[in-house]
Image 1 (spheres, rainbow, N blue to C red):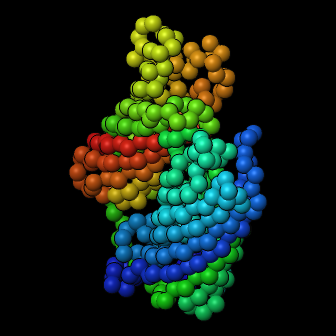
Image 2: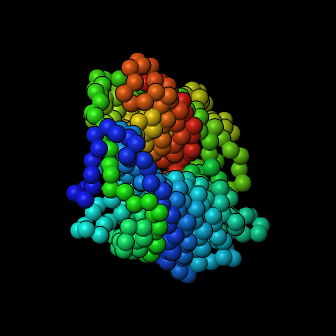
Image 3: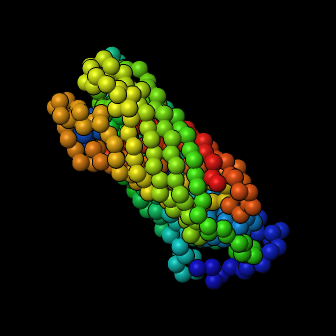
Length: 376
């Protein structure tokens, strides 16, 4: 893959990160994913991006094939300014390259960050925008392009991109925006280098470890487009898991997660759907399986869970207050990031971490949470 590159064993002075600048234009479509959805014409976006191509100064650079770390600012139009408005997004990302021939290559990257929408749902002034319910939402962006290089400093690219916007069910309505684009861009890299450092391998601890975690989430009461304008409720949760590091990149875990929903308890009290064990029945217990992509101190974590105890939803189905859906009844998920105090190769037996993530019910956003934990 790097047949054109020279490799230095440990001389980090020859493998400094290189900066690049890129501008891109996007043309695409906002997809209708709900029965009642605002009309929209073609959507467009314009990006400015700063990238840092890693050349092996850190050990994780070579383990992830010398990726490019990126920071993007994006302005977007959704084809209906009156209802959907515009947005300004900022998000970091990371990408890699697959070289084809001497000058051609395929670049792919992923980014996660925040977006500001200037015209979200408002009960009185903008009641038909059920797509975006708040000014500040999360953005997830995927992009794959074919790169045409001409000279060492300039390149052009052409490809496709997907973006998703959601407020994580902090405010309703929250149908969310999903867009697919065709994109073209121009990239400028002032300093060109094919010199990559390859650091000596480090020993990895592959013994079983244990994780204890406490999280605090926030959301409105469940619903995709209504009820809206309600109070925010807290979700308290804790988990215990057993994890194993199988390689530098991958760590797997299995464990139990306990959740206590203050909105469930409030509903149970007000509607008297249970007369005893009300706090217990405001809880949910999940058996989950997790995977972490490790990048030294930082990790991206995905969890898929099976609901072992969920009496609140079961009772609402029995009372015909909600429909019974298999995924909502039995499946929960979580995606987020953890930052560990000590790096992956630390000899410390106790490694505290902080995390942020979004939780889902059957694929729909449930709540956004902050967490803190300890790996033992």
